[in-house]
Length: 83
Image (cartoon, rainbow, N blue to C red; front, side, top):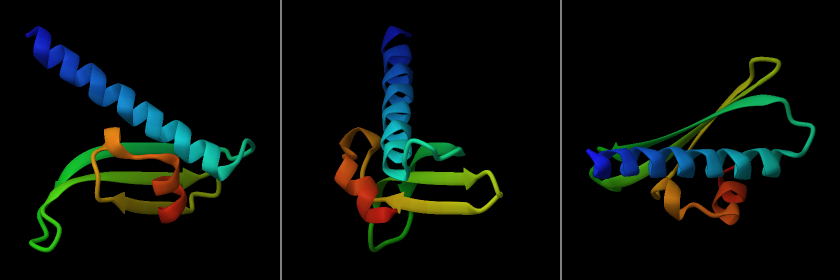
């Protein structure tokens, strides 16, 4: 039970960290909703963990990007490369 809770807390923390990286990249004045979710890529070419980043701007413009890494492995350079 404790290990499962620790895993959930780590996943949550990493998602929040990636959200901060996205907001920092977009600029201080960017008003948007940012969603970060880890998934498993089912494409035979990439097969492995991916992190899906979804941004919804105030004008409802939506941006979706995928980084082929776990959230814990994403750096500011990765965010800059996909946005």
